[in-house]
Amino acid sequence: MKHTRFFVLAAAALLTLGACKQKAAEAPVAEAPVTDGIYQFSVLDRDGNTVSLSDYAGDVLLVVNTATQCGFTPQYTELEALYSRFNASGFEVLDFPCNQFGAQAPGTNEEIHAFCTGNYDITFPQMAKVDVNGDSASALFTWLKSQAPFQGFDTTDPAGAVLDKMFRAQDPAYDQNDDIKWNFSKFLVDREGRVVARFEPTEPMQKVSDAIEALLAGE
Image 1 (tube, one colour):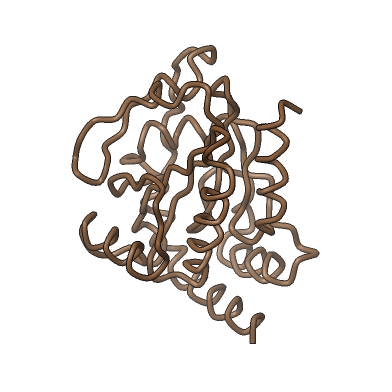
Image 2: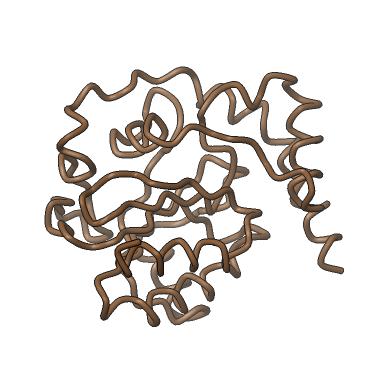
């Protein structure tokens, strides 16, 4: 049953990748000083207020592009568990809904927030919807991708193998660019604002948790 869900997801990916590729045209890489790290950026929260990411200086951050109607949407439960476990130690989840992948994040910022709090009891910060690929991509996500290139799906994992096969059938060179491929891609940022890891949506959340714990411990 679990694998069936991933096959459905992969089929959806195949059908929508062509449309997404048009939006995912090559975007210029941000040319900000690396020493500024993630703190050089400001974003909008779900209420439209500007938030400087320098407000999170000293914290370990997990930046995620999310969707409310995706096969991976239940990962909200695991993200909240990570937030509840590590927040007191200086960890934050920054949630950016994105509607670029199969139009799976419809609705306003408020509707998305109501869905996530009502169904998954999230308490971590939820930002305004953004694009993560293409000419309209958020400057933050353009920078994140430049710092943590796409390394491919783990094809030893059944879901990763299905996604790799389906995306490659549409574009044999799909893995040669650093675009975000699907919902719930994750970027891990250390206490100095540097991107230290990128996790694709099929990667086990335990792997993410272990990496967060190591950063918080100063390893």
